[in-house]
Image 1 (tube, rainbow, N blue to C red):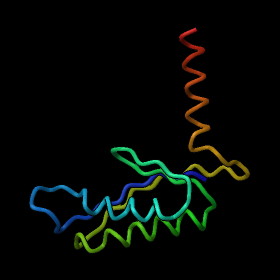
Image 2: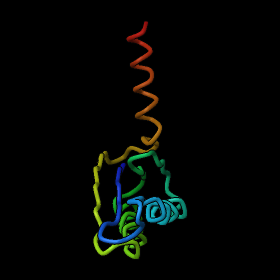
Image 3: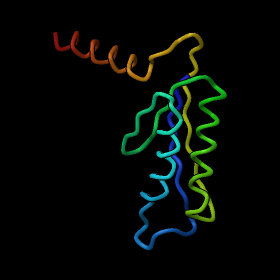
Length: 103
């Protein structure tokens, strides 16, 4: 499965409204998990089995707890049993489709 998630604190934290320290704590958890992952400006994607992926999301969310009195978690899942390598595979198929359009 692929999970795209975003986790951020509210109700405390920095005076300028930035959440980069909290996000850094969450991304550090993801990076140490050993699961395939990618972080962009808005989301972090993780690939793996259901229990492993959700354990990482939970740990990343817990890493953000010290940064605010409340946590917001946005999550989207692509559940496709038996498939692996989709973190890159989906993008590769998209690029091929675009190239065919450009012909």
